[in-house]
Image (cartoon, rainbow, N blue to C red; front, side, top):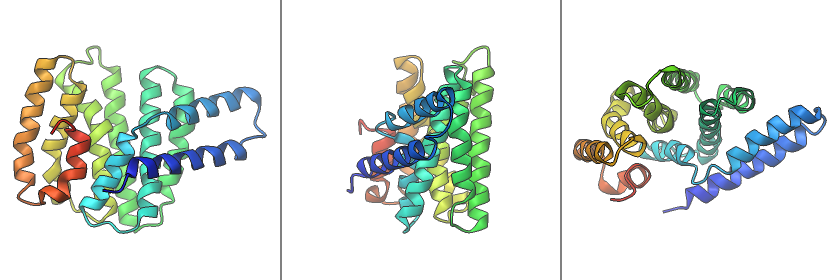
Length: 225
């Protein structure tokens, strides 16, 4: 398998370098904010969200890796924005989120794909914001909000980009949400329960895709398999 983590890393580093050069003339305070976001973006290895975009794209037969990588970078940027929101560093996060939205709005793909990617990504960010606003962030509703933003949306974005319909994206949703819940669960017992649910749902996915086709997705979501 191609090392997509390295490919994504190289793309993000190149983007950060280009962005730093293009904003060299801004005032010192603004430059600090931009640089802080770019540092966090570069340090987000293994770039799980970006890798999930690529995994979803390949799962549905996507061929244009340039488009996939550009979209993957933007989704990693929206996730970095979400991380800054969790730290209540909203201004820093917004620097990258608006840039990511511009990237997504200008993707060279069919308009219906571009609009759907924008729509589901902003829905995921809205859910994440609702989760952060919740008084109890360990509830199942809050956990679902965070898992949707961090795991389900990136995978769906890649699939949509390759032309997947709602039935196809729905086919991966139960597995992906449960695998995401397992990674975010607050106790080992809950993590184990969600992982069991994920593996049960994986069986139904294997009726649609082969084990080889699913291997990239599963290694990201249930790496202990």
